[in-house]
Length: 248
Image (cartoon, rainbow, N blue to C red; front, side, top):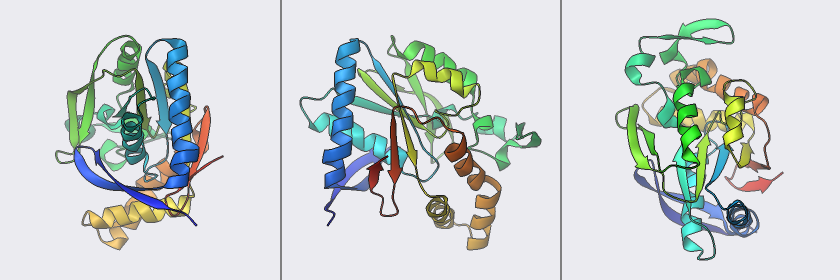
């Protein structure tokens, strides 16, 4: 029988509850953190970790929880968790430009969140410096629904960057993976993610019909793209319907 424990952590500036299986923490999360600690000591330089997953897997919450765990265990090197969403184009740009997605030209605002709505040149510039410099990192403000530049100072010896597209097989994302010392991919069943994403839209004020239409036109494509077109990296995890994680 699974034993669940509740934690209070900060996600995107907001305090929220995170619930994880105690056995998974012992058997998956802590061994991962110990491995990253040893890898960082071995390399004797800042360690960069990429964690990629489809929308609604809970990767942002997990990355913040791993940061929390690394602070709680004295023998571990502290992790700093960062998100990729601060590299979206700014809203005024998205609202006034098109993107070419699978050969079709569409308004960016209709597909916000897909790889073509990220400023990959800016991502690359940050990754070129993050190994050796305490750079400033942008965030995506959920209240403003826009990017805010240079909000977080990168200071720790292990940096965990989470995002949908970090392990994408296609360029320009693929060549940016050279900057990662360790890579994690999280998978999930598409039907579970659909329900989560539709429910998320409904909570935001959309009707069920509107939420399902948005999923069909946007979210579903992003889910499929991550699951189909991502490289596995060094560690493969799968999130279950009860939000537990298993090592593949």
